[in-house]
Image (cartoon, rainbow, N blue to C red; front, side):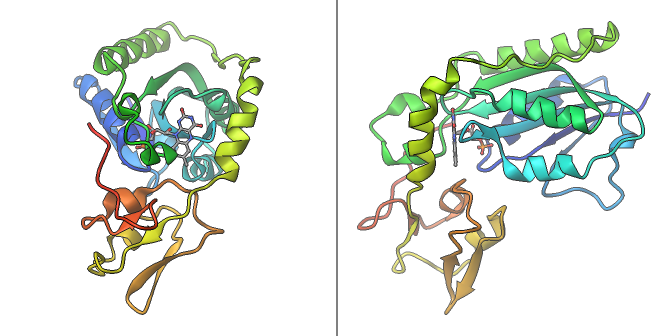
Length: 251
Ligand SMILES: Cc1cc2nc3c(=O)[nH]c(=O)nc-3n(C[C@H](O)[C@H](O)[C@H](O)COP(=O)(O)O)c2cc1C
């Protein structure tokens, strides 16, 4: 039997952690796990019998690097998949969008799941809202259950299972538009910056360049994943203009 593939994009680490958790359940099934940013040269989805795909929810949609990866996929046969997203609060129609894109590329989602994890977005501005900085209760139990459901669906040759359109999500559109419109600027606190280049290396969009040894962010390319902030060892990048942010997230 061909191995399973787990493929994910993770801005800051939640989706990676869930992907790795899922891999640990597949102990008897040979499974390879990759970030879309780190694929081997000879990578081909044709080498796998089933795929597990993970993405964070960014503004109610799957992350762009994952969608870009999917656009390049063209297997010679249909491949069953389990798709999942991690979100800070609510994933809306993210999984439906992802499932439809998968179908276009002969990847057939037969199971999907959304996991609430600590928020990594503008919520960073609200350190007092502690509830947004925790993974949901029983996350491990849920991922385990979803993995075994996926295996049973695989065995019973289940048909594609596209998440239904959540009609009530338009109620959240004003909030979503506000979220998109108010992309918070990222400030550099030069007194803390040690020019280590970690922000530049970790930017999934390649939006950071060094000018006069300091990082400069190209706003048009930035997707506001804030990975640069999370990776800065000196807390030199911050959503606050006047003071460097202290780490407020947990787990
Ligand atoms: C730019 C951005 C947009 C986000 N949009 C949403 C959203 O629309 N709904 C939601 O519930 N969480 C949202 N989040 C929170 C992330 O989905 C959540 O923290 C996720 O687990 C991050 O996964 P990662 O660590 O793999 O990047 C957003 C985070 C970022 C950085």
